[in-house]
Image 1 (tube, rainbow, N blue to C red):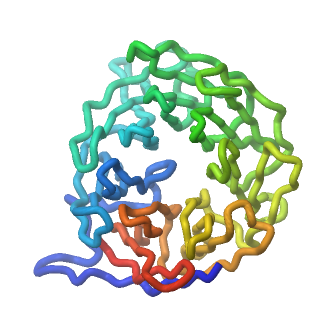
Image 2: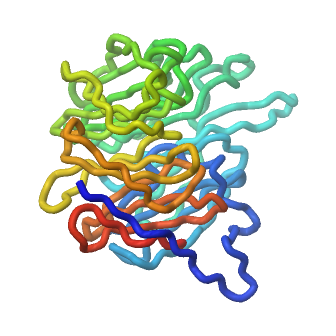
Length: 378
């Protein structure tokens, strides 16, 4: 698949404005990207990009479907967060789940998870409500829980997942009555910080959690069924960074860097096919993955950051990674994983947080194949 991208262009600063611009003195840094798919499309067709700094959440919103204008960044204070991720439901609602560390009255640190919702594109974010901690107050293990990840069932019920003190997985979810159920122990051990959560079009959850020299997997047999733990996978995932994409009806493909070989691989775990090498340059962080129609073909678009900060982009026929991918440098540099989405006109959009802060967006143009216009700072 032909892939091309033009160089980034900086927006001209206004009078008294430095380039790049900070927001209220707080720079968007690579140390604090949102976890998961941080560029999403709302029910009205507008894209929204999210990042965070040490003081809270930052949000950029398209002015109209397909752009090119954007509003933001808007700032939503969320003090004491160490991690923040998001998940979007079929209803378009965006759910934020974060890990918070605060000083208790007795001088010890209190760690809990918090949840908030954005109901519509560009609308305010609700109040942040605590989801508690799998461990009781005073239990020293409470401070050792990892960053959370979330998924949203087709019914709209939010599921929050977190690594416990021993590397096993805990889950808390909304009940059918809207109230949150108690924490459930999914078992497991020695899991790392990151994980991949997928809700298929059929409504099934899948969960893949990397470990030191293995990966753990849970799945539902059907929507609403119990989470069943499968056999551990004997794989070493570099940096614990794994991405999942539904590439056929109720079938998923996982992408990660093989720690032993240093190569990017595609894995369809429900088939007997071996991993497929898709790139010889390791990804620094998770790969961005997207299905899109290119030249009337169902294609998978992939983007990842390499060690020098460049972003590489490639495309192939969906589930035809074995046919080969040609990775092209986009010209953008970042210290954080890139993001991909389809805009309201069906065009591929690549977004990155610049090395010095700020959101840069490049959009597919009308040329054949996957050709991106210049990345503009918004």
